[in-house]
Length: 351
Image (cartoon, rainbow, N blue to C red; front, side, top):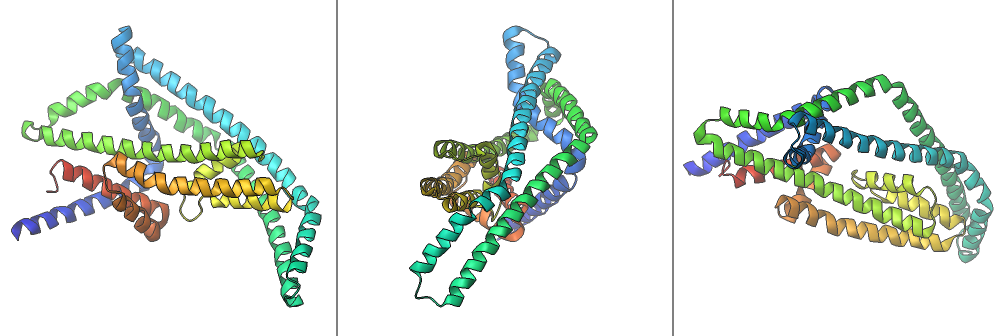
């Protein structure tokens, strides 16, 4: 009985400490963002840096400078290319949205007539209401498209107006990444020397397991996002859907957001092509939507659970409970709760 109470006490303390750390981390993230990013980037760069030191006999500072410079050059090039393409496609979409819908009103009217003839036995008032609702929905879609486009462009302009702040964050991130990468191995040795010998092994194992599982978690979701991105990109290119880059990136983003999902992108695309009379693309988009959704449902629990070493049901429960409790932030809270519990249980802290 005493052992059971002791374990319950440890679980209670773990939950309280985890909750406090989680809330504190995200509440202070706006102040610590450059340093958090720099720390994560340095974890990526430490192995390439050690490789350069070992193979080319470079000094630690020079190897860190080279890897940091190459890393951020690749990021800047990729971000610039993606942002320029997305901005161009969004501007084009905003210009053509209302024109596209107005040009296809005849097709929509013909579709309504076909529906009217097909359901000629229905009450005329019902048919009239359906037609009004369709017309109203099309107007709302058109206006919403323009509003979304305007909001995105306003966001881009606001982003440009925040250039000094962004430059400051970027500068602090780059410098901190360089220093973190350069000093990571030395810092590791100093920290190890400060830990008491009797607790050294357990603490190091805990840190190692936590780093491994968090890294695997982030990697697993990156793989899921890339799968959605590639399925959408390749499928839309084959079907000849316009604005493929923008739609693919939006699908990948919406795929990880609660409630919304990829249907937020796929279904409006299918509706637009349906009313324009291109039934082949409509069917293709719907089939692609089903394929992407099925792949997502099959792949996510398997990739996440296998990478974390946690049972798929535990991951599914964490995702569902977190989303119901507090949206995407609740999902992250519950998933990391499961992750850290598993870590501490593995190293014997919670046993």
